[in-house]
Length: 192
Ligand code: GDP
Ligand code: MG
Image (cartoon, rainbow, N blue to C red; front, side):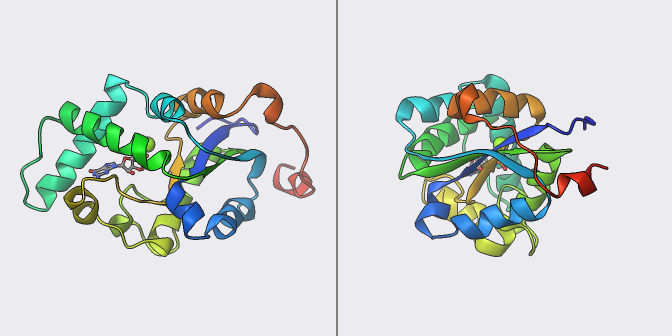
């Protein structure tokens, strides 16, 4: 965690959030922490954009595949391939999911933005997400449900997992001049 007041996180309200009419409800959660929205738009992700967001990066594919393998083993199932194979399969599914209908892309800024946003959204699968988190409150999705249907876990939201991931992702969704700089009235208190 850095001491920067301008740390940024890229958040996507995925198609299930938009289709279920939960956009306002979820944005409110971020605003209430005192973190600042500095960019926001509704966008239809093309396959190209989806492919850039879920990049063919071996490290990320392995991390997604390993998480999925562990989840399969913890429910007594044999993982459906090597972590890399699983990661690649999930990436293909994610590219369809994210471009299914519009998403809302948001840049959220403030001290400890990345970890705060991740804490608010909860873990990847809503079945493991506590009440009070976005994934825990607005979904009852499970790994079993998603995997048995050959689709990604519909977990409402994407959020950067690190500042490096945020930096890479923000460039994909926003031009520099779409990211705003302004002072919220409560910052005088929060950052005094
Ligand atoms: P996140 O950062 O919490 O969103 O999770 P990851 O970066 O590990 O995975 C990216 C996305 O892939 C998740 O948000 C899910 O939509 C999907 N996903 C991850 N793991 C699995 C899995 O084991 N099965 C399925 N069907 N989808 C998964
Ligand atoms: Mg992730």
